[in-house]
Image (cartoon, rainbow, N blue to C red; front, side, top):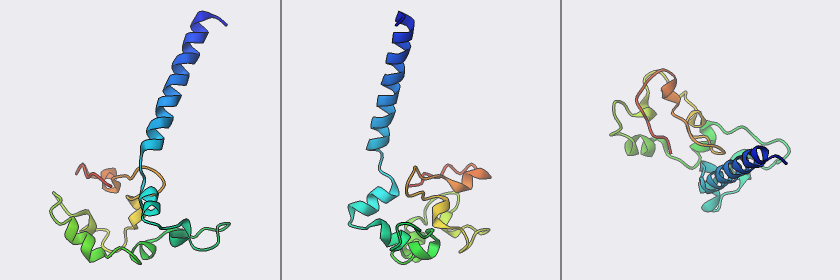
Length: 117
């Protein structure tokens, strides 16, 4: 193998290893739910071959929306849980992606800079 090819392969392998380690260290919402004893079936139903889509109704079986509004009441410029144009219509999973890094759904149109857990 040529020295340049060997060096490129070594660098690529290093980046892959670092990326894999970072991904393994990252805790997603689903990881936090599993850590408190929940199973996949808790949110996705009993049929593993045909998992149910998670909706706001699924989330509010455990999470009280009034408590969430209170917890986030001081977020500026506006509480994301009381959005005037998505009142009670925005699914939790628009921001809180349980199997990957959460997103700021509002950032599609606004620059509020919300940090989503």
